[in-house]
Image 1 (spheres, rainbow, N blue to C red):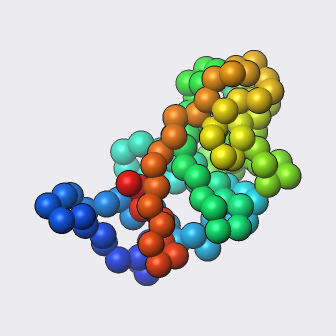
Image 2 (tube, rainbow, N blue to C red; image 1 turned 90 degrees about the vertical axis):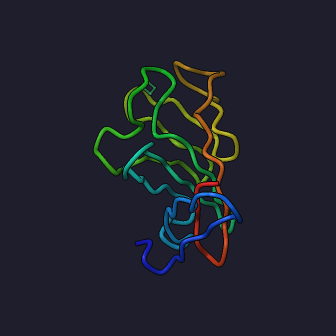
Length: 119
Ligand code: FES
């Protein structure tokens, strides 16, 4: 998945974590990245990509009930599979559900040449 994305390094800094290609994320959907370190969920709408820690603020569990299958609705919200909390793509805020008003923990991203990096 990340083999076509080169390692990026800011001068004097550690290499940035390569996550995937933008095209790996379904348009209007989500991509789960369990990987090493902090598990992430990336969502995309067209050219816009957002990243969040894969942890629901309601019970601090992964958003998916089936590993790797993160639910989205209408290219607008992520739905937690456990109690159906809805989180906006744009800012991770819960707009409906048992943790309304809480938010997913955002992962800063950097997009370069069609590749997504953790910033
Ligand atoms: S654990 Fe996500 S809504 Fe309850």
